[in-house]
Image (cartoon, rainbow, N blue to C red; front, side):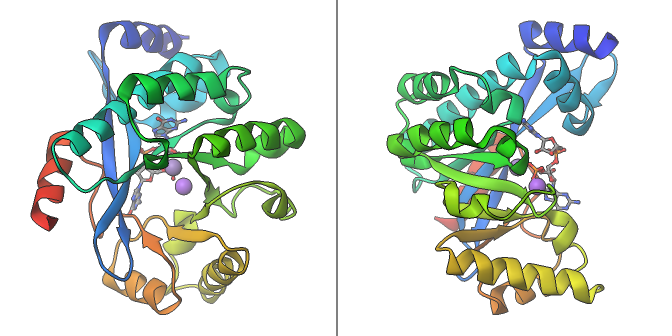
Length: 253
Ligand code: G
Ligand code: G
Ligand code: MN
Ligand code: NA
């Protein structure tokens, strides 16, 4: 209850901001995209983790206005970088299943793109396996988003208890290997086998793969050897402010 009131006020008072975490091409080492991650600076509680407040935002429905705010902010920031002359990069935004089920999601996305004047090919939406609950509706929404030219990925892949059959039905572009698999690539043979298998399966289905939670050079080497396309994690960079990401982009150009 306390957090719910806080979330409502936080949105009005501008207590949220968005951080960006680079996504890197495994073969070239270059930043080719980023993920937008919300941050909340509460006046008394300080930094509240999205792991704590996103579930409450989902339960209370506040994820709808909060998610829309993140989407608009991320599109605007991406366009700012393009206008400043950086090589265009793809911006990934997390969409919770409650947001996905909202009947006007397609309109909300269209509006965010129009208002920011961002080319849809530079927007990616990260969806979780839980959207499969209503697969007929999900497929139709995904086709509308794809028709606009937006990229779609499945986040936290492999953690959602879902049937694999959706992979042949959903018009998606990539899979994001969950960090719980990446973490133990070198300590758990089963995790290593799963990561390797997810990469091959994705490629056989003509999907790109990105590994999350890459923290060490050894993990990167493993992924490179197995032809994983992209990587994201503390080894490259933590989620950082827009200003800090500008510095990173400047250094690689
Ligand atoms: O940024 P961090 O790793 O602390 O995020 C914790 C969790 O919160 C992750 O599961 C992440 O997907 C989620 N999260 C972060 N930002 C957003 C957002 O803008 N929208 C949604 N729906 N989830 C987010
Ligand atoms: O669920 P989702 O994949 O959107 O969650 C992204 C979360 O993972 C963010 O909160 C981000 O801070 C966190 N994260 C990103 N890279 C790493 C990493 O290398 N190690 C760990 N432990 N967390 C990471
Ligand atoms: Mn994500
Ligand atoms: Na994830």
